[in-house]
Image (cartoon, rainbow, N blue to C red):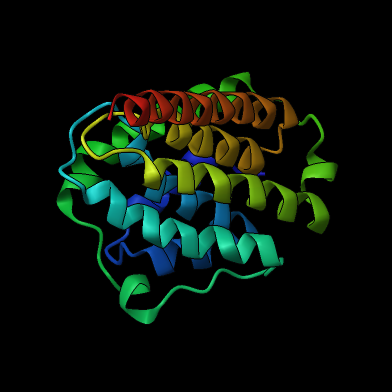
Length: 192
């Protein structure tokens, strides 16, 4: 089986760089990869000016399809046909590929058969839905969306690579992020 990073690298060399084309290339793994690409900007501890909230809305659409057990990812034609810009292909993609290659070196096929079942995919989708909502509901410009979004990215990589240990690690990061959002949100609410 070809490594994910190699598939992505060859995809990035194509002219037709759209999320729809990526989904066609990666079949069932398209759910996790598109979700990961949507959540990567929120997972970075950088100010994004609220752009991440728009991406998180689209992430809700993707993860909802995972929860209901769809086999193929449906994207609105407008989103599927939208070209990815030079910022993504020239700056973000090479860093993302290095990140993915690091995980590929350390992953093993642990629990791949269990992760591929429809029930587990739906359960993982439900948990990811909560993480995406946690990232979306985190106060803007606070940086609190970083941990739940990082949890989504790591879980997605674990699903793509078929490594349940990475999925569990991502779940731990996401739960810690949600706990932080709730704790700091409660503290801020009590101060008001």
